[in-house]
Amino acid sequence: MQGEGEEVVTTIQYKTYPSMPEYRHKFRPDDWPADEPYHEVFHLEDTGQWFAAMYDKNGGGQRTSAKDSKEEAEAAIYEHVAFIRKFWDQKVEWMSNGDWTIPDKKNEPRQKVARIGGHHYVIGPQPTQSMIESNRRSGGLGHGGRKFTIRFLDGEVVETINLWAQGEIDPEYKSVLTDNAEFID
Image (cartoon, helix red, strand yellow):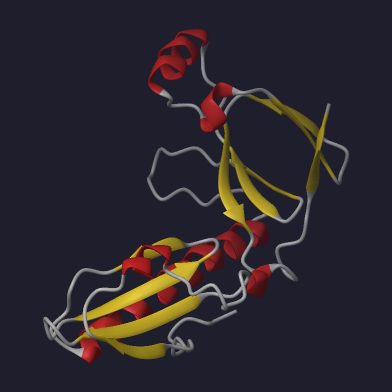
């Protein structure tokens, strides 16, 4: 894990193509291990433009728009890697806060955090009946309002219809963000 102000270090592949390859929509070459992030800066000879292709299993695949220089494309990758690390560093803060979120806004409620099977979840506020009907129509409840029953390691059992997933915990953080609960039923 990375501390505040530390330099973001990542491996970047550098390539040149005569024109945009058709397979670039995959973001990761077939021969690259599926569990490892892939970062590539590539240059197109036909346009002279630079691109950054990024694939992180937990951060999504993406390719930036055209950049004017190799340095701008590299910067896009470093920003992406820093964003992913900041995301998981926040989850470590929540764990240190007794597995409760730290609200960003003054009147925002704290929410309980669950880590189950190497995945990270937040239990959203329990909605009122009118909110349930409104949110189910608009998709505003976590997991579409599906009911989950969660047992925490301390024995507490929570039922929720507002469970939000943050994804599989990044491998770099798995030894710290260990499971604290399980699904039951």
